[in-house]
Image (cartoon, rainbow, N blue to C red; front, top):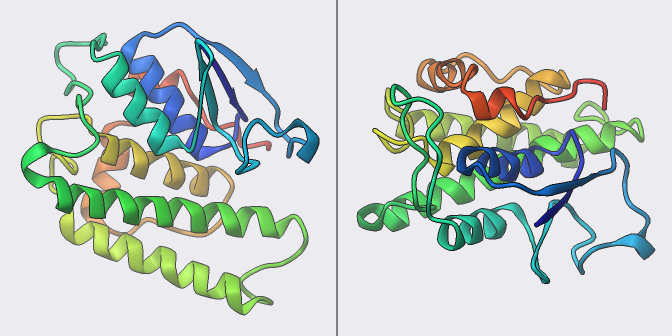
Length: 208
């Protein structure tokens, strides 16, 4: 198994957290730059990309779903920690959870858009598109705050929804993209998992 990624990508970090939670061994090919088009690993020109025995998958949600279904066993780091959920969405709450995941994907994409465009000196202050992205981030966070519980998005579990929230906002904080805090339940969710071993093993590198 080989994962192509960068240190900074919150989408790649989501996959790496799941791999760490499951204790799966894998090689990693890390490049902290945009890979040239001729070196692209799939038609999306994006990372992460997972190669598992010749099966190549891209887009983090697809990769995570594959890992959950192909490698159902998890390796709990501590009996005191909530276990990794064995599913993307709860079977009895599929559409609710799928909507949360879709919102989290939009949140992550908007955060990354603002960061990447800043390299070309394009910011929410001089771009109507990025100003809208910043509003979208705020709206997504407000919506998520209304739906998360005091025990995360799926009480009793360390869910993919939790991970899909933690990765982009940690990236947002490390890169100083914009303030995101100020929502009690989301703040608590972030702080509660800060020292979880799988997150400590996949830190956000603030330099890239």
